[in-house]
Image (cartoon, rainbow, N blue to C red; front, side, top):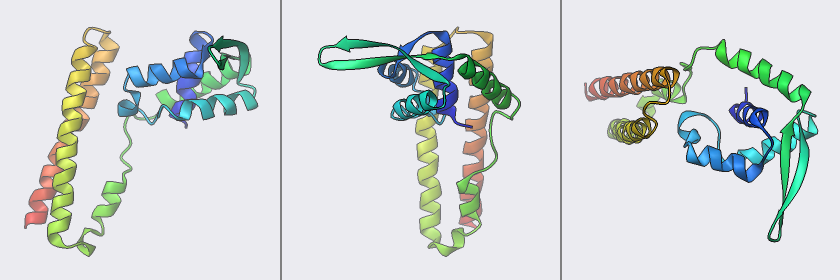
Length: 174
C-alpha cells in the first residue's frame, strides 16, 4: 500500500487542496519520520490519482506567474480511501521485515570492526531519532488519547530497537 496515496486521498477528503499545500502539511508534520511519505512524492501521486479517476482538478489558482491546480477527491477516490483505510487498520502497526535483519545474516563478510562500527553508527542514528521523536511528541502534547497511544507505541518500538542494537553490539564483541 502506498502511504502517499493514503495521505493524499485523506487530505483531499477533507477538502480541495493544491500540491504545494499538501507538501506543506507533510513537511510541517515531519511525516517522513513517521511514514513512508516524502514531500516530493505528493505531485506524482496527485497526477496518478487524477489519471485513475480518484481525484480531479477542482479549479486552478494563479499566484504570480504560477498556475496551481487545486484537486478534489472523486466518489471513486472516497471508495479507494475507504479500502486503503481498511487495509491499513487491519495490519499490524509495525512490520518485522527489515534489510537490517537480512544483513545480519552475512555480517561476517565484513571486517569484524566494520560490522561493529556500523551497528554503533546505527545506535547513534537511533539516539538522534529518539531525541527528534521526543521533541515532536512534546510539541504535539495533548492532541488526543489516540495520538498519545501512537506516541507510546512508537516510543516502545524505538526503545526495543535500541535494546536490540545494544544486544547485537555485545554479540559482535564476543
